[in-house]
Image (cartoon, rainbow, N blue to C red):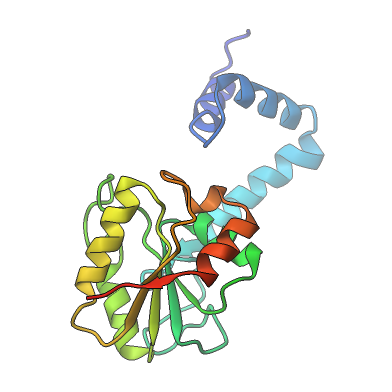
Length: 202
């Protein structure tokens, strides 16, 4: 293979994406290069726009345009008012639940778990979650963390953190496979887990 620094750097970057290795990265790059106008140019332009204009909300953790200014009393991302918050680890979990249409309410994206690199309480927006509960008239918090050791540890920590609030705390039913991650579940499993969720006792 001809040594072209730009290509080599791109292979290394794409190989870091989930489910992709060097071979897959090379195939993707060749496809884009062979379709410069249809794929490569618009891809580069869109990535640049996303980098400049899309950020993570510091209150709820979801993605938003940087032109939207959110506050605890005024979420400009969600137009409707709800009394439930679903807590998930990652944005991909939010997307999976949204696609199942089983949940109507706010989302709170932690951005990880307590046991991984994002072990800081502030990084996981747990303090922000408590603020939202107190200011948004939230009646129920649904813990939709993964059925992994890290996910369950985080769920227990959040439950303990919410003891001083009057909010109902529930957890997805244990139809989730052990070690299963929310984003990998099919709609049927998600719907069943939400419908059969259980209230957690303080």
